[in-house]
Image (cartoon, rainbow, N blue to C red; front, side, top):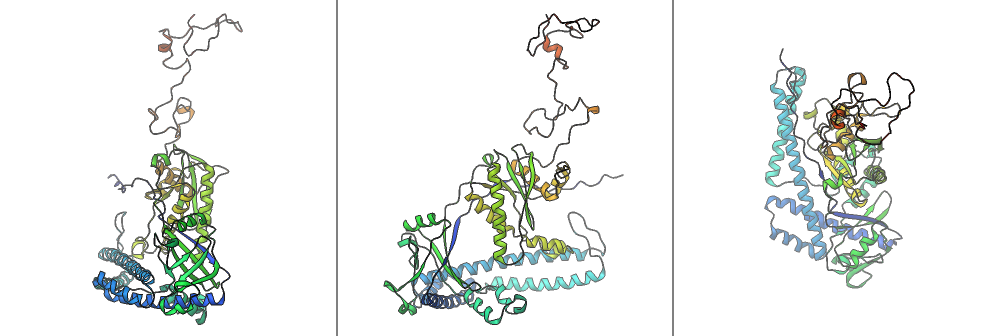
Length: 549
């Protein structure tokens, strides 16, 4: 009989402390705007948005042939229709959008290549061939084989087109967003009329954003906000006749306060440090908003050993909740599991609010526990959600596609940094499998229910603390050992002899004769064994050694 092949496990990466946020963004509403203010903002946004569309068209036409001279020519042509600073903001936004499209294009090509390799491998296998842990098998029927062969030709065609576009430097960019563009063909499902969609589409294509400049007055010469909250805009040259202040500026009647991080923002503008601003209109609510953002030095992370000093909270990220468990510094679960639920259905604003709410409750609980760090999986499903990878597992593909891992991690890192907590990222390999195997059943009590997600949070926390996920078995029964004298899971890895039996400390121990300095078979009794209830004439001495008098 041959022995079964041992499963090959991949190498687990070491945990690390995640870097803190590198930027800050705050927002406040522009209240009590007059009709003239609203008119000026709409005209400026429409004019600059038109210039941004023209600039993006020129940049996409240049493709890979773009250089510094063409950039200067584009900026010079925009300056005549706006100003030098508005032109700089527009060209920078254009470059960022083009670069983002190039990165997305590369990810799309890599996804197509992965799908084609999987299809070619499975089509080369005999029909009905079973797969292994390392490679998938063949397809189940001739019909499925035929449909997958057609899909292979489709993906190969898409890959050829994508590669040709990348070599030519061509990208697909939509100012205003592709999702909103496609909504135009599904107005009934989106519960929108053509007029409402048109207003939203035009507002999304406006441009009212200006980068900050350190050393300039209040950190921005284009959109200037004073420490008292007064907002003024440098009007483009064709709209200079609408100004109500000196140097072609228009001062809004609204004042901003920035309740959140207001003091930090005020310190920056008073020191004339760079602050970028963006003005945008929420068409559904009919409200104007001002967003201020700036860069900040990367928050210095604490050493990993310091993060482990007071234990840690392990967090398992799921499609609808955080599963969290507190562990002490030795890796032992403390208390009961906690779950922080969120709903990721609905609009983007609703999903973002749900994530913030769940993260806030998690951080409050971590502060009450007194830990210094939270452990979370370093998840990335960007290349793991194609149907070529997971086949018929449609529900699983929908599950991993619905988890916004990047947004969850970024939100948790930024909010934890403000709470004085660190985030320890761990390798997600085998956490759910080993957690359920070693921790789910032992932690179940009549009043505590353990799920696989709760057990995975324990595995994540132990890996972040530097302990193995495996849990050592409980001591044997009294009838099979020296009255439960074996050490338990409470012993740390560094304790010598942790796998041995615990030696008794009474005088009846196996080495009592050597410690007492006598070689007698048994120790002498203090009273006659044949006399019942006889009082002892000896004296009791509290000493670890035996009295031989």
